[in-house]
Every structure is written in structure tokens, then in C-alpha cells.
Amino acid sequence: MSDSKLGGQFTFPGTSLTVQRIGYGAMQLAGPGVWGPPKDPDGAVAVLREAVAAGVNHIDTSDFYGPHVTNQIIRQALHPYPAGLVIVTKLGASRPPDKSWLLAISPEDLTAGVHDNLRNLGLDALDIVNYRVMGSGHGLEEGSIAEQVTVLADLRRKGLIHHIGLSNVTAAQVAEAQAITDIVCVQNNYNVVYRQDDSLIDDLARQGIAYVPFFPLGGFTPLQSSTLSDAAGRLGATPMQVALAWLLHRSPNILLIPGTSSVAHLRENMAAGQLTLSPQTLAELDGIAALAVDVKH
Ligand SMILES: NC(=O)c1ccc[n+]([C@@H]2O[C@H](COP(=O)([O-])OP(=O)(O)OC[C@H]3O[C@@H](n4cnc5c(N)ncnc54)[C@H](OP(=O)(O)O)[C@@H]3O)[C@@H](O)[C@H]2O)c1
Image (tube, rainbow, N blue to C red):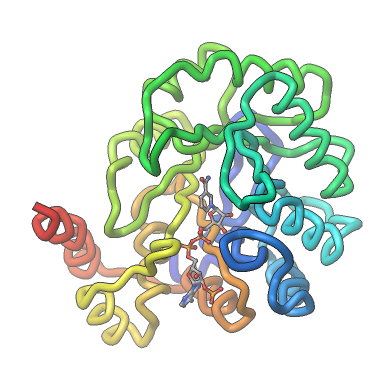
């Protein structure tokens, strides 16, 4: 892996979309609380342009970041989009003026959401749309998603969406969706500490489906671990780079979308693709999750 730029490449199954395994998550470009404009609008544009100039061709976004702000910054920074850039957006929520997150999952909501994304991104069709399940809490919640996936499949037939993915879903929900349409990616909460999806990742890998962890660096609670720091010290890297490199080593279907509003952090994150982790270091890092579970109990 050491000589592959941006972690090497991955092709979404059944598509002509090939991306570098290190992409970029745009949520951090909205203001505090994922609301409103960024503190530094020029800085946000600079991050996006630097990412694409360095070869990143997979950007994760949503119209509920801002709301609309993140998509509008992507358009401002990158439109007309370079050939091969894959923008992945997600539907399932809306943001009322009180800054809360509301379900937006009716056929009308989802259809309006696709049109909002098309308008704000300046596109005629969306490469990949994830249906993001919003449970009552933060975790995964079982329950049928057939109605929503059927609506997205209809919008795909109309040509407004090229491919469909899922987010915040269980294995049963993935299977239910696959009975309706092809699923090219799954985006769930996962990182070196939080490993609830280990078996789902392996199952998706066998099918060639991308697994795109959100919060790869811990999200709103950045990862902190002496094991990560020790490994980073030995490798002359940073703990965040080691956390990203661990994900790249974990499974070939894992695609990274670390979020940052900082060009310096972006460069650091992109360089994680150059790190090779030895079997011993991987074993130590694998132990972090077990330790975290022990601490919780
Ligand atoms: N499907 C979903 O439900 C869902 C949920 C959450 C997020 N997402 C997507 O997943 C992407 C990634 O998640 P995320 O951005 O929430 O969390 P993340 O990538 O785990 O972490 C982002 C946080 O880490 C900091 N950071 C980034 N690079 C760093 C570095 N090299 N050193 C130190 N700190 C660093 C960022 O701050 P700075 O800005 O200061 O760098 C930010 O506070 C999002 O951008 C979004 O596109 C999806």
C-alpha cells in the first residue's frame, strides 16, 4: 500500500465510477453545529480545490449540511466539475430554522431533496445518493426502508440519480434494499475504536460494495488512544494518519471521507495513504476496540 497514492483505487460495483480510496467528507465546511456558512468561506473553497488538485475524486456531502451551504460551496469551488469527480450526497433529513434534524422521508420529501441537490450542486443527475436512515437516537435502528428505497429506484429510472447507496443501516436493511435495487455503497459510523460493523464490512467486501465509514477520526469526539499515539510516534506519523491507515488496511472495500476545514489537516489525511502498518502494529491497533469495550463495561 505504501506506494499507492491516496490509498489506491476502487470501482463502485456495476458502475463506471472509479475513485481513489482517500476521498473527502464536506460536512466540516458548514458553520458550527453543521449550520450556516463557514467561519472562513475562502478557506472552505481552498480545502476543496486543494483536495481535487491532489487527486481526490470522491466527495461526500448533503443538502442538510448548512442546510444547502456545503453543496453551494462545492459548486462555487469546483463547478464545472472535472471529469471523474464523484459527488455522493444523502437524503433523509431536513433542517428547520431551529437547527434541529427532522425526518424527510416521504416520497415528496425525497423527490424534492433530489431536486434541491441537483440545483445546489449544479448537476443534471446525481452520481450516488445515499438514503440515510434517521433513527430516534444516534444508533442503528431496525425497520423497513423499502418505501424510501423504492422512491430512489424510481428517481434512478427517471435518470435523476445514477446509483444508490445507504447510510446508518443494519445488515437486514441492506438486504431489504438489495431486493429492490442495486446498492453500491454503505456509509455507517465506524473507526478503529468503534467497530460495530465488522461483520457487515466483510459481507459487503465479498459483494464488492463500498463501505464508507463516517466519523473515521471519531467525528465530534476525536479519537484519542495511547496505542494510536505510540504507533504514530514509531512511524513518524500523526495519530489521525494511523487511524486512517488502519481503515485502509482493514478491508479493500473501505473508502475514506475524513472531514476537515483545514488545508493542513487535509494534507495530513491524504498522506495517510503512504503509511504501511506492520502485522504487529495492526494487531496492537486491533486491540484498541477491545480495550474500549472493556472500559465501557
Ligand atoms: N452518513 C452520516 O450520517 C454521516 C454522519 C457524519 C458525517 N458524515 C460524513 O462523513 C464525513 C466524515 O465525518 P466527520 O467529518 O463528521 O468526522 P471525522 O472525519 O471523523 O472527523 C472530523 C473532525 O476531525 C478533525 N480533523 C480532521 N483531520 C484532522 C487531522 N489530520 N488532525 C486533527 N484533527 C483532524 C476535524 O477538524 P478540522 O476541521 O479542524 O480539521 C473535525 O473536527 C463528514 O464530513 C460527512 O461528509 C456522514
